[in-house]
Length: 408
Image (cartoon, rainbow, N blue to C red):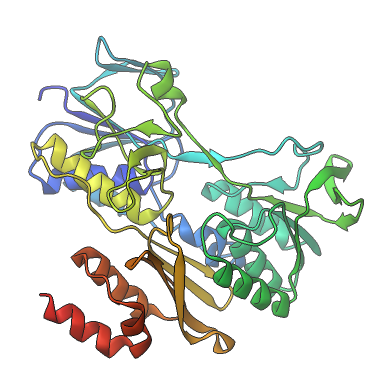
């Protein structure tokens, strides 16, 4: 392929796609385009260790030499303005166009901005990139009061980190419970209890109607109930929006993300998509999903590389996720969509337990708090298509391991 493959997006998905192309023996040109003027880095630490350590630096996904030795043409600080499908080229803002044989869109997502008066004030920050984390670190070092909008993973990770650093933290969540989109009620309730014990104030079933400022900097948040919350720093964590505009303008089919098939191909076969921006029919549940996780990003990127290299495998990776919130390591494997019952094992009062989810009689997901062995065993069981009974789950890990070994 004389023009090779261009990858747009230098996050986990884009970097893995570039690396996997070389691992698959692909010998055409590989161009990796990123909008940030940084070497690609791990994003999960930004909401935890990075913002509490003034000396912390981004953890690189790959060292600079990796791109050189693997003949990957990494181009930072570039914005792709348009995809010309007819000419198979990318038009760059302020630069010459680049032609391609294959294109991988790993454009990710961006934080959703709520329509709240005052959201543009200084001190109101969403976390997506290292520049955002640097700003949060800088502002939190001198503020006393923090308000977090949204009770999802990012918001709660930051809330726990800043509360541990001595800040007064209030979380405002519109739904009636925390983590409502991503975990079952027992996990959400447990997280709420632990954070409350840590000293985080949590308001559920509440919204912020207005942010007030002084001299252009946020000073307080006014809730829908009329309460004024002091805030010199407001973290906005109310979800993300997939970056589909580039594909949409090119006429590529979009449906809650760039629509892809089981081999990561979009409605235009020479254009593939992976990661947060990709929407697809999941093999595990039969439903349409768009998963925002490092695991999904990297596994899809590996498969996209195999597809470009001539493979015909279908995507069948078991989804798993994690989040570190204070002293809770949350690990999830599988998808709870369609689950109608669950079994709890472990010791919730000791901050160590797992919730096994069933749809009918089939195990579909496991959510764990500080029980990593349950998580790893769950990944093996779901990958093998093995579904234990509820009774077997209650017998413990040894019984599950023996049963899994017996089915080979």
